[in-house]
Image (cartoon, rainbow, N blue to C red; front, side, top):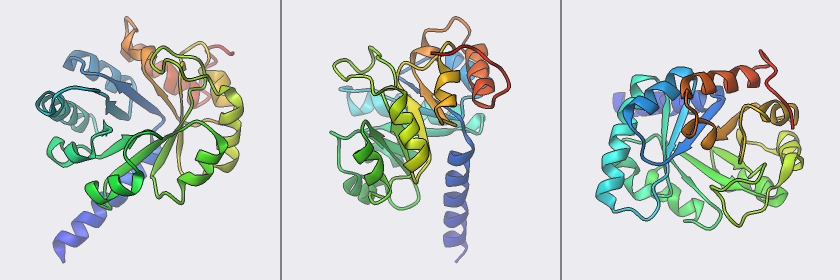
Length: 223
């Protein structure tokens, strides 16, 4: 009974934390100094994305990321490797439309960890709740080299998600300090970023500026 109650408390906590966070960092393997700066600046969720790397390398980086996130009270998500989530100490997994099916990922990670899903069209947003995902990424809002060959969906899909999504959504794709205000104005309360932090000379300041913009505390630009 105690173990079951503890598990349920952990699940509620993870889902509550997901809903309360505004800034989500997606990145490849990065040094502790970078992670600490981004987390101090307000990143509340970090996703480690290491495509086509050996399991040992992914796990080594993931365990380190999980420790850094835990130190800052942030959630840690592993990209596209539900089979490594438990060993990595991750809070969940993120999959794309062309990756493993959500139902299969759920069987692997269990009912208590988070599953995120990338969406690129209204029909995919509409199907997310039935797929029993915990959150979705909506994008790419703007063209981005991190998603070569995928056309930008623009702010129209952000508007659609704000009106129709039944799970928390993170706008993603080319979002930075110059355009985050426009994304927020389109209805996004949460954003996921890559280069806005990984290419910043001051990721702590950049993260703080993005969070403040999402909260409506500053105006940092438009698009």
